[in-house]
Image 1 (cartoon, rainbow, N blue to C red):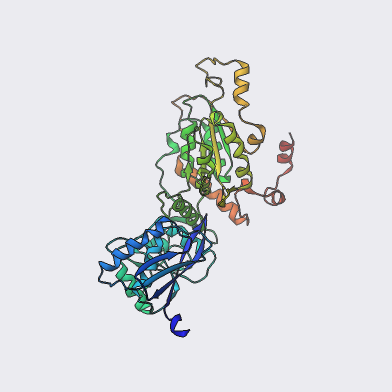
Image 2 (cartoon, helix red, strand yellow; image 1 turned 45 degrees about the horizontal axis):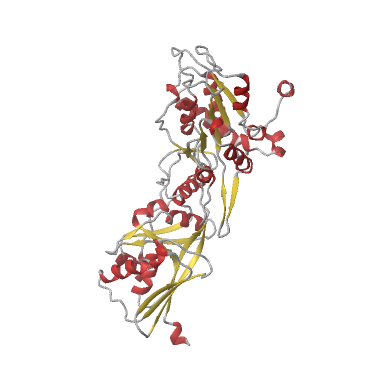
Length: 461
């Protein structure tokens, strides 16, 4: 029995189940018989294709493939697993000739046919998810992603560029040096912890002429993360204001930055660890599935998940399908959404700031001083009724963006607005408020929003 147990090699990796990672124990067995190579454990096509990549990587790097029955098992075997990041740990088990276990480290990496180790879109998300549940986590990842992974707090990261480097690393792990954990190279304010922001404004509020009411409302909305709807004739600056909001939003904690990087990597979009809050602006004709997520084979996240902790902007609001608008009510209220399918269930965060833009009437000229409105009262009423009262109840600020004289000066630059947002954010943190103003619970309103008699009288009116 002891002799047989020495033929089992083990290594750790992980896989994603919707948005969360779970540990995967990979075991190898080498037995006498007709030479075969089998991978078991409820794996998908990308893992089955690993066999050819592993064979090529080993043979082209002067490793002899053992003439035995090779079985690799990915446990737990009752949970579906997918991803080419299992290539490296499985190749290590074969190259090690069953001599030892590798249970102190989690290993990830896709193998090229020449033995180079490449990163995949899911590795960062997997490590980040593991870091939230496991302490003193040690990981071996592709070198090209090692510095980004090293930014995750509490993770000891080792980067390898080739299969041979990985083999050498596990031959002497004690002498290996982890990747240095670097702090984010961005501006920050210290309020008990660091909150990061960027002094970069590709779109600046200095371009917005006049529109003092609209710009002021944008400043208030950004500071408190309030939902906002801008109403005005075409060309008055609704979209200009909305697109510039993303650059003045409150600073981000390290946890916020890592969360956004995780969501983007899960969606297989380009991601970078940056304190730039997300901004999503799907077309008003986008399908309901693309907005909320879903799918027949497996539940996937949608635009509102990608906008979480940032801005979800919807232009031409009354032209968005009514079913989509009504379905937005729950994620706007609960800040989360559950997608249920027969084969999968996924719950994800939807803590976004909603910004909408719309015309005042079908022709757009109802508020215009230079053009006549061509719409009847019934058409205007029907147009406005496309937005239901329960939906509008979730909007904090309604602003009419009127036509202005182009000679009017701008109210603020984006830098000036960002400074004001930072002041407001610091005030929230210093009074022990753990959320934005718009997210304050009813029980905390009297604690954080103390009104004098004059303000209370105005509120009653």
